[in-house]
Image 1 (cartoon, chains in turn purple, brown):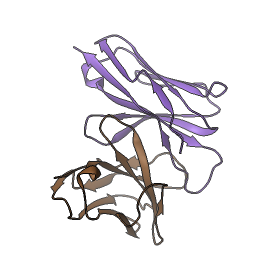
Image 2 (cartoon, one colour):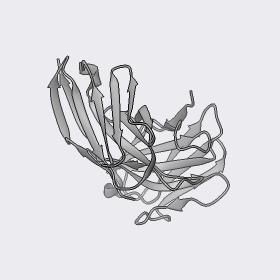
Image 3 (tube, helix red, strand yellow):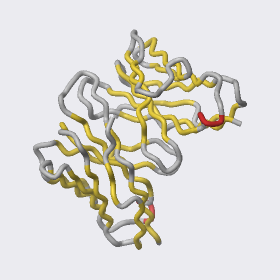
Image 4 (cartoon, one colour):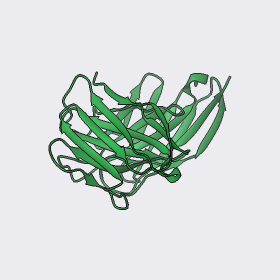
Amino acid sequence: SQQGEEDPQALSIQEGENATMNCSYKTSINNLQWYRQNSGRGLVHLILIRSNEREKHSGRLRVTLDTSKKSSSLLITASRAADTASYFCATDPLPSGSARQLTFGSGTQLTVLP
Amino acid sequence: GAVVSQHPSWVICKSGTSVKIECRSLDFQATTMFWYRQFPKQSLMLMATSNEGSKATYEQGVEKDKFLINHASLTLSTLTVTSAHPEDSSFYICRARPGQENYGYTFGSGTRLTVV
C-alpha cells in the first residue's frame, strides 16, 4: 500500500502557539482521518473528513482537505503541553469495499514546550 | 464507544520462543480486525487482515508462518509471533471495525515486544 507523506516530520512550538501539520496522499479517497499517538501507546481517532468536505472543526482542531491537490492539513490552535504526541493522517481509499484498509502517513512528531 | 482491549501491553521474550498477543472487542462484534506493526519513530504498517472464521490475508512481505493470526470468534483475534528474533522487536497494534464502514473503528492500546 502507498503511504501518505506528512510534513513536517517534527515540529516544536511554544505553548499557546498554533501547530499545523500537512499530509499528502496519492490515491482517490473516500475519507481522510487524523490520529494522535502518545509515545508507546495506541492510536486515538481525532477527526474524519469526507472527500466531499473541505473543512471540518472539532474543538481546537481544524482540518482541511483539498482533493484536487490530494492534501490535507491539521491545525491545532492554542496548543498545550499535553498535545505533545505523534500525529498521523490515514486515508480510506476508493474504490469502496467490505474490507478496505487504511493507509497511514509517515507522521509528525509534535512537541509543545511549556 | 467501542473498546478494543489488547494484551499484553508489553512483553520481553527470549529468541526462539513464541509470543501471543490478544485483541478483544469488548462491546461489539468485530468481523474484521487489522494487525499493524510499528517500528520506532515510524508509521503503522499493515501486516494482515483477520476475518472471523476464515484465513487471514497477509500483506506482501509478511510471513504468514511466522505471524500466525487466529480469529476464531467475533470478539477475539490473536497474533502469535513464532520463533521470535530480535528483529521482530516492535510495537504491534490491532484495529477493529464494529461495522462495515471504514471509520468508527477502534485501535487497541498496542503491545511492545522486545526479543532478547
